[in-house]
Length: 433
Image (cartoon, rainbow, N blue to C red; front, side):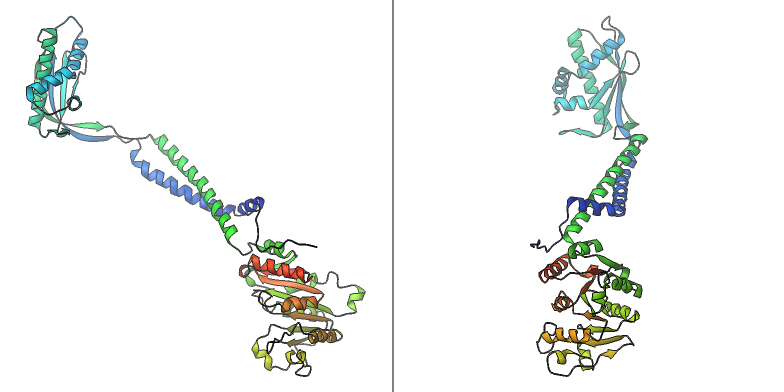
């Protein structure tokens, strides 16, 4: 039967959504942080403008003109006519003709205000200083007073030309003053200020959620290790027996392993034979998982042999090494008795020869199966050596042990692909978190 060959974990849209929903607390943290940043920035930048009125000292030259009854119109109409004459281009040209100043019309109308307050025959003229209009500058009060006089003279001359009568006379000659004036500036109300802060905080809250989703999704796709035990189960297509938090285990954990491996081994036909258990380990921090499972069987008063094929070089000098016997170079060693029901032997490849794949190793298992109720085999890291795969073909049961944070999805898929090639079934998984 053909199977899909996979080397990497692929996530569907629903899986990405589900993973992100599980991380709601991280999204909440990002949302609150971004809301605080944007809301705080909005508060700081706009706080100084809340219902604030700005004043400044303004230096002016003031003058007042009296508008005579040169027509039968109401006083307001006559004063407004004089104001329009003062702001006309003809009055501008008359002043330039009289003074010879280099000033454009826009500068002329910008440098003074001629206004009427209450209903009366009096209009007030204001010229600010110091100021500049292009190359034309009003630097001090004396020149500002001269400017005011010239504006009044030009307005008087033009009004005489237009009406044929004397229309205005000076009520107050130009004089310098300093006044406090409100400056038009950007300001907001208290209600607008808090609404703006709320909008900024809401936008930051939503932005924080989006940022968390994007970052966590990228992490999911780029982080090549299993995110949880469920992903290990999906990669190996085997049930999870137990997960060990912070690497802490107990004998109860290994009782679960022993129980999980009993499922189809208790019928009468099987009970007559020795039960062979293979421990397939991959980057696991639980180096003695196979030994502890063997101890569980021994605790059930089953005569158990523990074969440690992952022993270090120091074990070669002990009397229970089977390597020489398997390679035909020594007599069969006597197992080391750990207790009344548990014996142990160890072995490793020597002189470049393969120990587990040797036919004498299979014969050794057959011989010991007549003496023991259980045989538990511990092999080298399956990611580095094929011993665990070969040992699995000689055993009825195989359980897998790994550390989630130390193994990659690609490694798990490779192990599963190899197990399928050799028709090996993984009966359970023990995960160290």
